[in-house]
Every structure is written in structure tokens, then in C-alpha cells.
Image 1 (tube, rainbow, N blue to C red):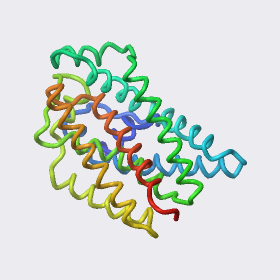
Image 2: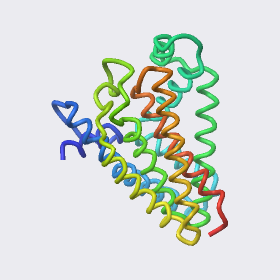
Image 3: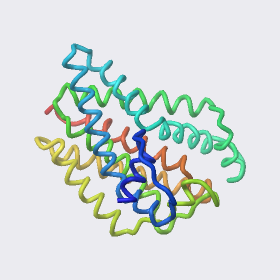
Length: 250
């Protein structure tokens, strides 16, 4: 339960307090992150449904829901996305890239990345709502949080000796990650059940893209950071929503 409470404290604005956080508790929180993601997806689906019921245009409902998701996660993942893109976009050593990520200012690469992610997520949410694919909304948020497990695999160190990355790096076994992603693969097929291959392919391709991001971050920064975790979450959610718009209409 400490792991679940910590996952809720890290990934939502819920006033959950966990004292004495250690590496073991952090690893359990990462293992349970997809459950929190599914709950956030349920919140997003309910928000979309309510806005459409009130007569909101689908795209506006998607934009408002994207903003609501950022609010209930304290904007940490969006911030991590911006910092990671700035770090990947700069020249120089790993130390310089990490310094850029710590700086807090937002460069043009980061601005473009955030605009694209927000726009694609809003469009994907609108498509899911108008086509009745509510399961895709839940799936996308769950996959976004399952991205943490890929980033925290056994062979990936932390880029810094402190911070969230140092607490959870290398904490996830291959077995746990395989089980979760197997479940998500089946959930992808169920979310687009009339064209099950669309959802399954979306999960599979997203997993591959997240693995590439992890490996690139490992080479560029020397490991993962909390910002890389946030960026992977946003990338995972965005890709699932985008890819599920490409199949035949349900």
C-alpha cells in the first residue's frame, strides 16, 4: 500500500502523504503507476463525456480535458517533456545537457514539443470521444504511466546521483515490465475491439518508441532523470491517442 500511496502522491494532486520514501517503495510505486494512469484515464473520459453532454465542440472538449490532465498531475510530465527536449536539443557534453535541463528556462525546442503534444492529445481525445472509443482514453493514460517501467529497467542507470531518477532507476524487473505491457497489449485490442489490431499496434509501436527514447537518453545523458520519466509519459499517451486515430472508423 505504501507503493500505491506513493504512486498517487507522485502522479496526482491527491493529498496523499508518504513518509520515509526509500528505493524499495519508489520501485513499487513505479510498478503500480499504470493503475494510477488508468484512473487518470477514467477521469479524462468522464471529463470528455460531460463536456460533450453540455454541447461543447469535440476539439474544445479535448483541449479542456488535456488541460485538466495537466492540472491533476501538477504539470510535472509536461515540464519534464520541455526540459528533456531542451537537453536533447543542445550541443556539448552530457553534463552541459543536464545543466540545461536543470536551468528551468524554456527554449524553442521545448515550446514546439509542448505545442505539438497538447495539440495531438486534444485532437486524439476528441476523436476518441466522437467515435465512442472511451477505452482508448483510459488506455493512453495507462500506457503513458507504464512508460516509467521501461525507463527504469535493470540496465539503465540514473544520470544524476540525486532526484527521482536516482531513486527509481534500475528498479523494474523484466518480468514485471513484460507482464504489464502484455496486459496493455490485450487492452489495446479491447479498446478498439472492432478493429482490434489498431489498438494492439498502437501499444506495440508506442513501446518501441519509448524504448528508443530510453536508449537515446542513456547515451546522451548517461542515464535517466525525473524529466526523462515525464517526457516518456507524455510521449506514450500522445502516441497511443494519435495512432488510434489512424484506423478505420469504429
